[in-house]
Length: 461
Image (tube, rainbow, N blue to C red):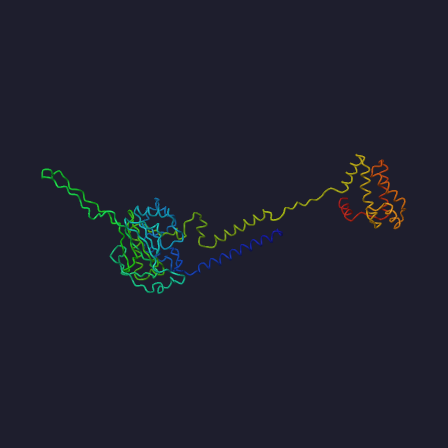
């Protein structure tokens, strides 16, 4: 446990640092000031660019409103049959792709009502209506200095707009106030290939009264006049249209070109609130505000849903990443492979005994003498201060001059050992005698074994 204390303390410290960093970043995220250049039009947002006030007012007044957090294709399911109005406000954080737009427009054709409150709606959400096509055009672009919290700056130079005609969308609306960043809605129509106004009904005159039976002939059924596909303009400042709607299948699409009029910062101006209520409540049924494309899509994980919008999810993800990094580093080599420490459990005396037995069985007495004599000659040369390959007579003379050993006897012993090594026939007894004499010479000169050999011998004895 003590060995792992440093690792455990490091992991705990890293987790504490991650929690502190995420907490600080979460607090600073809430302190961000709203900007009209990058607004947040979500009904969850209580800032000047949000639409929480509009949603809460509809909910508290008893109107059936919900936050739609599913994909648009869910509107076609049986569960969503009661949704009759779908509201998309502002430039959504998640773009609406072509498949989602097709599902949404298919729902509108079935009788739904689509309300687009945006300065520049996506083109895939603006289908043509007969020969009419609808587009939007910016008049003034918001910048980073635009303060949506200041009504005076947002409406500087603007005048109230009155409805051009009494409609359901302008009921009880005297005038509204737009921001100076509203967009102009443009209408364009294509030339018809056939002038339907000049085509009259074909009347067949009977040749005489007898050819026409008034009693048997029934009057023709009344003609059904189709609804006009032309868009209906509700608000305009004289040069630019601000609000219109037009049919699409059995449903309708309404476009309001200034989201500031329903945002928290501008909904209290003039009759903007009344206009916003009329815009979403002209039909019965549930009013659904699109939160799926505002970045609040539903998640199937209960844990993630509970902690959504808090730094807990980021902390858990970073802790999991930290654990994976630790596991990965402990199971991966970052240097050259090292062999396992090998402890030789055999005694050097075992090796000596084994070699002696092998040499005895093979009658390799010359090899046994060579093993002993090579070391003895080396220590004698060192004792005499000479090279190992020096003549044995010179080595014997130098050793005799520094000790009490007879030089002739030492030279003779060395010569006999070398002759046995070089192939001179020798018996077992003679080899044992030569080895004994070599050991006596080492003993008399005090030539001990090296310290390393002493330590090895002491460890194995």
